[in-house]
Figure 1 (tube, rainbow, N blue to C red):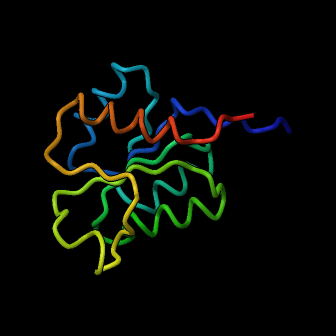
Figure 2 (figure 1 turned 180 degrees about the vertical axis):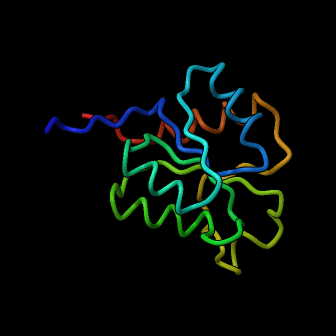
Figure 3 (figure 1 turned 60 degrees about the vertical axis):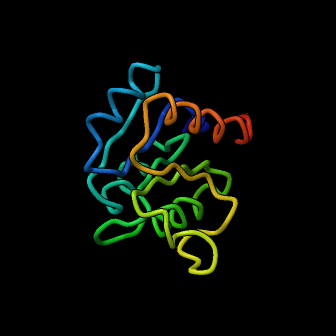
Length: 129
């Protein structure tokens, strides 16, 4: 069995409401996007082909984006994660839904904002080796 190579251009997207638009934006930028409808589906997709980065909404029915990231970090602790939400007020800081210092993109956002934030997240990720 060959060694797995994590490709940072292979992105796992767990955001059903915006999946088509985000997939088009990222696809046009050269990313291979695997769009999933929920956390369980995202975990199964990652099992088949490990992703290089996770883009997830914070608040979702069923498994939250934070829980999904925790599950994926059990497999690969250095996996970069970009969270997004339209409910930024109250997500950061004292509520601890998300810790300060995480990569976060507030909705609504532009294509440029998404690509810049994703680039920043990946720039801080370890180089696959």
